[in-house]
Amino acid sequence: MKCDCENCHIKNIFYASVTPEELDRYCSSRTERIVDEKETIIRQGAPITEFIYLKEGLVKLYRNTPAGAQIISIGKPLDFVSLLNVFGDEKYSYSVSALHKSTVCVFDINEIKKMILENGAFAFKLIKTMNKASDRVLFNYLDINQKRLFGRVAAVLLEFSSILNSDSYELPISRKEISQLVGMSIENVIRTISDLRKDKIIKVYGKNIEIIEKQRLIQIRDLN
Image (spheres, one colour):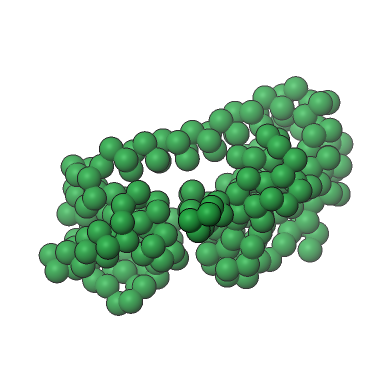
């Protein structure tokens, strides 16, 4: 599906530094793709031929290892989900799949590279965006690892509440994936969620979470 660049977020947040002629050229190489829940958007080991921007939805970034899939990060709207890898190698070093039905904008990587060579302002803005993307993954990792178990789980529950804009939501990832995100065992994660439920801070119905005492959960996140 072709998209209207004049009415898209990306024009203002990323392509403000390009000329109208360059904008027209990049628009001609840009398409929107609807991806279903659990559909793979980027496959680890595949050749890098596209530059991908998450317009709507929610995705997970993960690596396949001998021990199984290891979740790296959660991608939300306005994220450039291919940015951590797209200029570093010829093949993707991680996979991306949709947690919800999502919309991605896809660009021809050669057009992006051409714009980098021709437009210094665009290249500088792209570097800044890449740094922010890598910093977010690094700082989230460091922040989580400085917390104790209850603080780590509380941080994840509050992050999804913020992303989904609701205190009542279906967890988009499994308990096992939460354990990977927070660097703890799945047994500890299950026990912590159960303890939060017993303390009447949250309600749990299978994968559905309802935050009852949000301020208490914030305190747990910040103080543990």
